[in-house]
Length: 201
Image 1 (tube, rainbow, N blue to C red):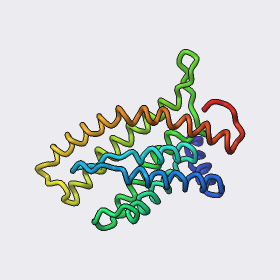
Image 2: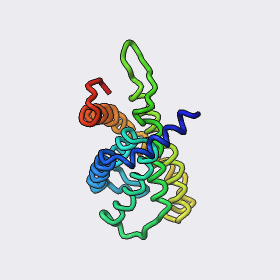
Image 3: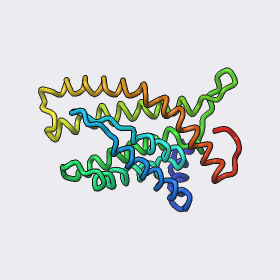
Image 4: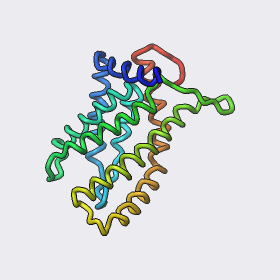
């Protein structure tokens, strides 16, 4: 438990690092670009902006991940306005997404799962993080918010759940391979660029 809370303290310290702020800002910008390519399909929209947030959470932890999620939502509202009003509750939800990736992926607190001599811990943690994001954020919270604000009628709630479950299940087939490829590459690049480490991520 002490290790868990220390992770938050260490992540908070990342705000004092110029490299952390610079890299985080870069991935926030990447997130904005990806967001602009999203596809609206009625009850939800398909986009892969979570990839940038996942990298930020992995590199700098849950506190920075939470902050990056907040910033991405606020900046995204002004960069890609959809005609609706700004809703702080969705900003908090975006922060929670960054928090999830930070808790699951922060590289300073790696667990090691070795199968046949290969460390698969990052892949396992990425899978857990994405599943938590999909279930907690996409299915539970966002669907409830859509219903609460009347963007889907109560009579269509079950249909929305079914549509969103199907959509997220299909997306997972693409999301997970992208995480498996992107996260190790970004972690290795970060370690080599800023810590001088030549070890594999």
